[in-house]
Length: 258
Image: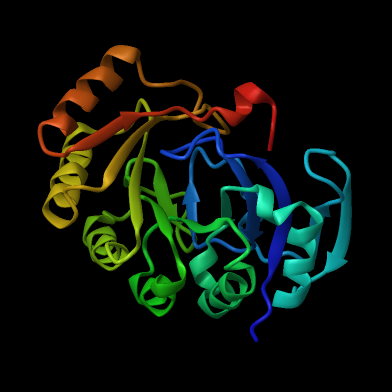
């Protein structure tokens, strides 16, 4: 079975999205093909030589091993963190769908032990998702906005690509999961036209999906949050097209957990 390039495996509290506050075991994959200006984990952009994993839940103590990690070893790491006590196992990154075979193998190894399988993804690799969707319980996808996101191949120059078409194809595949959420990270630079287009396409493709409007947590070159008035206005606009719209900031920086 396919081994995975992982950055870390740890137990924590889900800090964002519709499952915020739930006990989650995180499996962070190495490598990402996007460059978000507000990214708080640039250490995951490249595959990792070594993986770190918690010695005990919430202990802050870590052990390390070399990559890649085979599914049986991942299961042992997860069982050492009390796998059954978690609501979710979250495959996050980086971008997990750069390693679809490894995601499928990891899901197969961890399924049936209590937690559901939760995929956190930038939402651009529809073909990879189609290969593994039958192993995923919940898809939490980002809808990237060109005002703040670049591709790895061109991270610094000009405006990024418009991702709408690719995201819409991805969301159409994600509909097969039991649960789906779409997250828009809103910064002061986010433009009304690109936000409205994302809302329109989500409503067209999956009108019952949960749309999360997440005010950015300032990081790197992004120094400020959008105003409360702007977030309320966007929520009202989105609610006119979608059934389930929520404004949810990242909470793990406030809680001081990873």
